[in-house]
Image 1 (cartoon, rainbow, N blue to C red):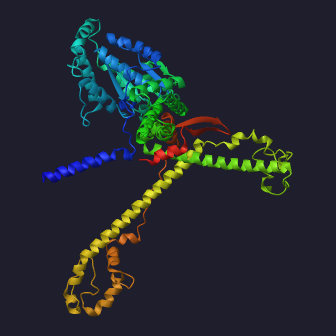
Image 2 (image 1 turned 60 degrees about the vertical axis):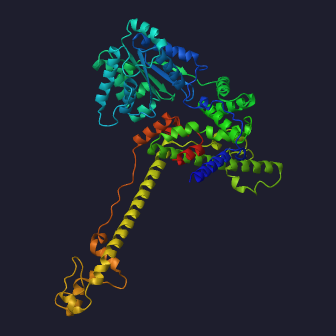
Image 3 (image 1 turned 90 degrees about the vertical axis):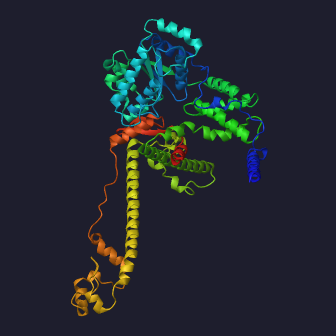
Length: 603
């Protein structure tokens, strides 16, 4: 038995080794030296090209090291500009240098409710998470305040980091404790991607509880760092007026990285992650160009593209990364940010985004058709001017074509109709962005169609269930019907089953026809089956009761525009106000419509 087991295990090892052998196009020499350097959660030891922003934030936070309340900070910048990395870098330094200032990082994309935010703060202060249910929010806030007060009484050594400091930090800790205000711990909370809280409507409750906690709990000092990636979001208008007046934040702007800065960061990451010679300067320039070409030049796309390119090279058994590896990896890396945004959308937001993407595709198809018509028309006019064929024949349908330039019917010369006016009507050939009114109408149609489709499926399931129930009941009644007496004399003395008629009345066989006349619905005809008989007897209401369908599912225009603004907050669409015959809004996608639909189809 042991021999068979050893043979089996050895065969498994051999088969596993064959899977990763050179026959399966895996390189014997790995290109990765430390793949964790290219992970999205990696915090570098040195943040490149963000010294001014780090110094400004450190200056605003420095009072917290002395037990004073730091200034509230509002970090703004496009996605992939280093905001979160700088905050993690600062928080790591604060944890090493101070016990007075307690930093807490909250990802609002994952924690959108007040309970989730305060649970994260509680876990940082106490060392374990609170119960997931059965605890009111007010009680959780009270527990956070008491934990902060206990930090003050114990000099910052309660629960969260007791016993975690090394002995070499003890002199520095005692020196800080002797400083004035060292017994006043301050809570510094970073709310990353604050627009998620604004969309959920929990921003006012969370910020008000944090910024005014000192009113209910004396001695508790809290400052916040708000991080936002949507430059179009006006936080002064979206936040409650009382909350915004208590905030009084200092803004720190993170500009987009330049091409040279992107190349410098990618070069440093590649030096730490891959072996020397794995990535040539030409390939690094190609990855930098691809990163800069993405909207809005997200550095995370470049880091992910670098990682995927190395993986592709290892898969193809290349000793260095080639242009083919970068081209193959670019399709996946380009959609990294889009994939993350689509994954957090609600069902209604996904439906609205799908409607917009479909309308944009329809507009692009119509624009291509207009361009093809314009090309044919210009070709026809040029041939006519060269005398290749008579202008009255051939594309005669274009003689009255007034979409581009002036035709003879419009008072033009006819010779330059649609040709010289091409530059003036260039916008006509571009895709027309859908307006908010058209999107709202299309969304209503899609929601109504989905509603009636669900009703149809429910009706089919209900009918199938009823038929299955009737069949089961009929099968149960077959033995009883077979056991009934067949002769007329025994049938006259027998009692019928409740709810069923035997076809004869109690007066004997001579009255059978009379019973059939009194109860014609119980008499089986040639077109009726016993199963049909059971269905009619036990469900007589099906002949008279009509099913009333609920009205089609619809949303108000106010709700629709809130969903539209939510997609704009996620930087998935751009809303532009146009003044035509009336005030309207044009909606454009920030990504390709085909890519958006591809991400939406993935569940």
